[in-house]
Amino acid sequence: MARLFGTDGIRGKANYYPMTCEIALGTGRAVGTFAKNNGYKTVIIGKDTRISGDMLEAALASGITSTGMDVLLAGVIPTPGIAFLCSDNQDAGAGIVISASHNPFYDNGIKIFKHDGTKLSHKEEIMIETLILDSQIVSQEVVGKIAIIPDGLQKYSDFLLSKFPFKKLRKKLKIIVDCSNGAASKISHLIFDRTLFEAQFISDLPNGTNINDNCGSQHTIQLQKRVLMEKADLGLAFDGDADRLIAIDEAGAEITGDKILSICAKYAKENNKLKNNIVVSTIMSNMGLTEFLSAYGIQHIRVEVGDRRVLEEMQKCDAVIGGEDSGHMIFLDNHTTGDGMLSALRLMEVILKTKQPLSKLASEMTVYPQVLINIEVAKSKPEIMKNSLIADTIKAIEEKLGKNGRVLIRYSGTQPLLRVMVEGPDQKTTEQYCKELCDCIRANI
Image 1 (cartoon, one colour):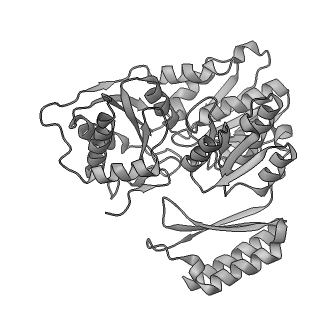
Image 2 (cartoon, rainbow, N blue to C red):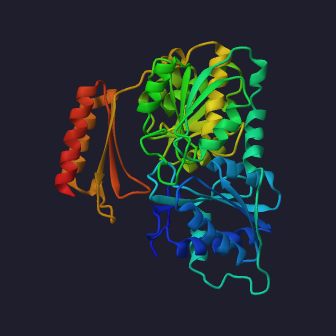
Image 3 (tube, one colour):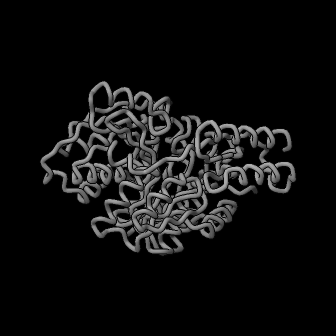
């Protein structure tokens, strides 16, 4: 069997391998066995708003209960909400989220959390894959029960708001919230209706097929226009499962993960809350982030793409702030995993306490022009650097860029795509080098 797990769980087109009911059933059995073997009684399941979520939820729950484990259904809830509910329930040995994050509605995925609210390690993923193939892992004598968690969203929103005493701050913010017609749609109201913020909501009416459809963290034009039209202080854009955040400043400019990391890291450093003076991000982060952090005496550690890799490095070096430019931000002093809503609250805390508009806070970090092109490839994913023509082209571009840029090539962990990224001193040069390299790759693979 081909490896099921990519960079963020199992993902694919719903009702097509590997996102079939059969695989979901086997995954349920595997996760139930995993949790049972560790001495737990329950597995919690949550989902985003995709139409295929109910189908996969039923298959997963059937697989879990066949091992004798009970299932708690949290319904539509952000991915980090399941991480919280796991860590908050002493009987829960695992949590499963049914979501394909920022992908279109016809895709879906399965993400798995352990009892402590952290994601599976690579070794544990391999263990789960082995168990998925084992049809004998059922309980012949005991069958589990399925129940609904009636207050999961309320508990999760209470947890988030407990970290930020906004009611003590006199200044209000006018915000526009783009819920991406996804898992943020309900909890955004629960959060912001309980604060002093003046909040308006868009893309908060999911129908099963409109999740991420020209809205959310990857499609911010609608939000940018609304922020300007309403003269708002801030726009917040979440992805389908609300573990990512992209912000919009009061001037309508998009503020991505790197800049949000820079703002939060500087504020934490100035308030003696940046443990070990370290920020962790991925190799996709802009060079400007490294320069900004260095100027404030903060060490910047880069890892391979994926929030799990960021988290593992943060745990290794005992850091509390990390993330990706895509909007995944992890604040280990508040939560065990990336959380879009938590990131939004952290960002608003900085804006309120510094009394600075987001545009001013974001302007301190210089962003180098970055061009990213995706090239469709065969599923076999050829070894690019073994082709001498491609390798020579990369070397030549790197020599021309020198210290003023870089080239990064990597395969997507979830799609048959080769991602080609070039960073350079100006937009024209960067686009030219990226096109030159992509033309070479297309001609030689």
